[in-house]
Amino acid sequence: MVSHTYEDAEDSAVIEAIRYMENVCGKEIRDYHYTHVITLQNQVRHLVTWLLEGNETITKLRKGWYYAVRYMSSYSDQIQTQQLLGT
Image (cartoon, rainbow, N blue to C red; front, side, top):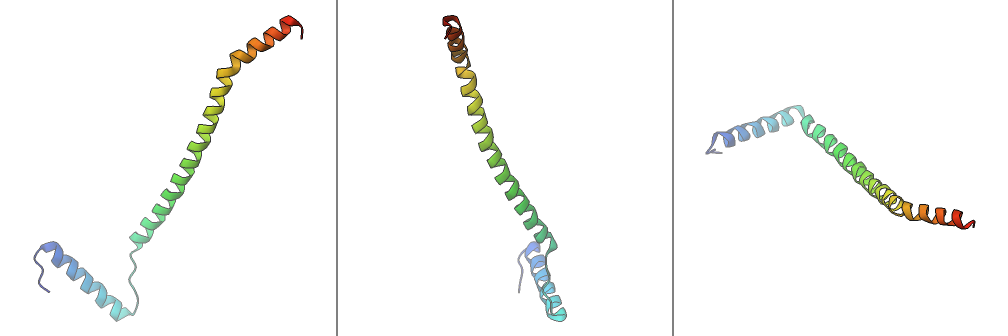
């Protein structure tokens, strides 16, 4: 195989070397860096899911506090009115 660039030649040499080692040893060569990358991707996926769930919870709590504060004065006025009327 004729390679036109240095990178192509390097890739071809590496592929041939890996094939040779696999044939001589009778085992598949694993890329442990790839395994580590997959593990990190799974961790990131878990953290993103956790973050999205947390954002949903924060939104619900924020809405609850918003309505509580918004209507607090009207409840306070209603209680004071009822106290003045003696009800």
